[in-house]
Image (tube, rainbow, N blue to C red; front, side, top):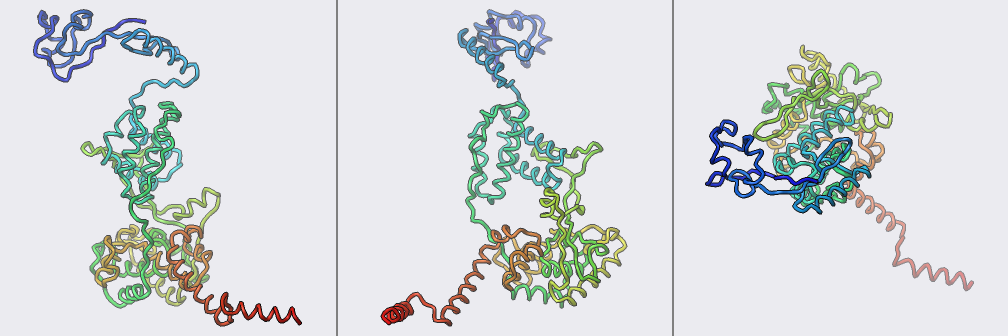
Length: 490
């Protein structure tokens, strides 16, 4: 146990200089007292600074020291000798129990980044997930950089609640992304022995409920779908802002293909017309999708920059054909391979053949289409979902379709429309699941309101059946009782 003098910097210097500085003739060490650098006399001062110091707040404290992992270190600094000794005993007890944690200045932001980097390097997450996690982190940086830059050891439950409660006007799925982003950093800190599990600030905290209503999927009505398909079949449409990237005919054929197959945009735009389309068996194979890939260095580390002003993370992202579809990734974890086969008979067979043959000829005539894409831009790059969404929005705006949608129509509505048409035709969910690559459970949840509508129609058929066969819980009961009574008497 030793008595020491603690010197903390004053925010503003006092007007009068201290005794040591007044009598100092060489001020080169402190650079003319323009900062907080101390000369040797100031460092050795043990008495005068306690009376008056214009640059530092000085006070005596008791320091308790000891050995941790073979290293001599200060275990406590307290005003009273007894308090310092008690803290020293407590810390040594934690050391003996294997629960002592050294002070660490690593921030929550750094821990979140380390967690994502670790998962990416170990292939626990794909590039698309890494990109999505970075976008989530950038949102948190924009709104709560002050909390993210706190040492993770000083993060409190109140800090976590402050962040999450400010995000309740996002969709529930987005709120959960914020939650798991924060949780990944805290879990990494626990894993690296920076904080104890007992002091986990996210313990018993759950994602808050969203304050906005859950959005139901919106399909095109039958008359709207007919209107769209008739228009793009009979009109030259050159308004697309992507017309310099992809020809109008390709965009229109792609839109038709999405309506008739229920495929996702990324799946359709990754189709290889030589390998994935078979005119003999009259089948289309869906087994890949377009995915985002991050630019990495020779060691496989993500190349990314930090914007000095906003502190946001940036990286170079390219679009490539993945090894599987969106839902196929889950199957691959279970050692299964998704290979959806769509027969030409999913619509009028001859119409589907004509569409494919026409588009294959367009694709073949493109000298830049080295990947044999069924749908691609003039420079040979795959068409993106954003291009198709822009094209569809312009069409719908001109045709006055879904004007009530604030953000306009999305290309994913073609899949919703296809599933809705399947439900309307009384196709079983199991068959729909096979066609669109979505589980039955997910279909039941996503299209619940549409299923409810057709359930009511089925109930009307059941009621008509009851009436036809004179089945009633009111009118026929008395007659049946009378008949049974007569039989008993006989």
